[in-house]
Amino acid sequence: ETGVTQSPTHLIKTRGQQVTLRCSSQSGHNTVSWYQQALGQGPQFIFQYYREEENGRGNFPPRFSGLQFPNYSSELNVNALELDDSALYLCASSFEYRGPQHFGDGTRLSIL
Amino acid sequence: QQQVKQSPQSLIVQKGGISIINCAYENTAFDYFPWYQQFPGKGPALLIAIRPDVSEKKEGRFTISFNKSAKQFSLHIMDSQPGDSATYFCAASEGPYSGAGSYQLTFGKGTKLSVIP
Image: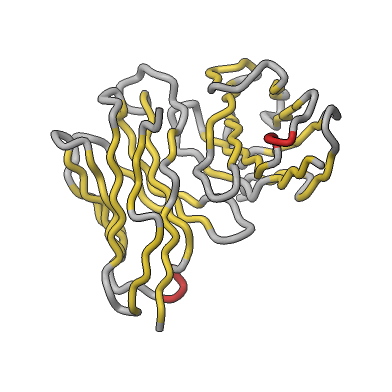
């Protein structure tokens, strides 16, 4: 059984740029949730995708957007990057939106 | 507004001792309470979870105690080992059992556990 995989592992961007992060869900899972984890903090919910539709969104601005593909993999896009966007971005997958969420190892994004 | 408050921020326990981490929540619609373990450079790994109609759940050396009236839950790690040294997060969400709500996980700020030999 393949777990949740995320790419890239690390990324360095400058303010104002745009970034796309990718996530492959665990085999058999149809729901993907994205979280932002600042240094020394707990993960914060960004949004969830279920069967290619957004199924809930946290308190993040519209420049954070996402997609889910027919194979249930997902992308997180962030436009107009700000210094405060520097964080570990975590993807979690689950079987159905009610199921236990299993996390990948994240993408470390640094904004200069 | 922090909906899940976790304490202590850090914890040092001797090998073989009991580690206890506490969480308190405010939202009475929460109906799913998982604990995650995170090692440096890794994502959180689901450790154990409980629903509010159960007061205690045990899996191996890990036990969750749940007090619905006090809106508190805790993680006990028995016979703590150096390999348990990690950051532990409590979390809560609405919906998995009630069928309503956002299903998003709300996390505490984490407890860094160090188990010394």
